[in-house]
Image (tube, rainbow over all chains, first blue to last red; front, side, top):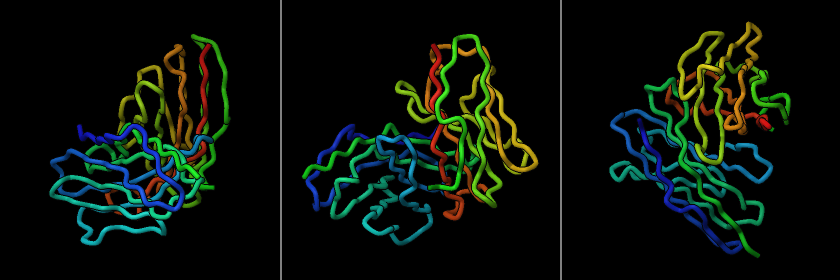
Length: 115
Length: 116
């Protein structure tokens, strides 16, 4: 089974600074999708950004960008200009083609933004 | 608001009981996925339905079952409940399925199940 690794269980960042959350994945598939979700303390899962394995450009969505390095099998999330409301758990997920297209999640990184 | 609704929000029950969790996907979405989030197992895929048909099973126990109805809402049935079934159960929906970006999954708010 494909494995998603998030090596940082917890991260701190000061407000207005940028932060990078790491994600590496293991797959032999050529076609797959990579996602980042945010889970605040209220519990809901909020979709942030998507990167397709064949996309040549790194995905960006507002303050979120995905640093996709296919050869290294990494898909790091960069949050620019952190805000207090960014404090949450962040999950990296991969959607391979051979599991009903379900998402395979990493363990998550807890991000705390300090004033 | 993702447009995916789940009821109930919280559910407290006893071991050995049976419960039903309900999910209504976003308007137009044909795919429904169920996930379980627990402290020890993390987020795990349970089952996927597309337009009423089961597409794939993940780590779903035999005590659990699901279905998707003609109006596309889905129900997850959990029976003979054990303490370890306590978790947050999410439903997610997408337009279709596949690896493409237009098939991102939008999650409902979840149902928090507590088994006492």
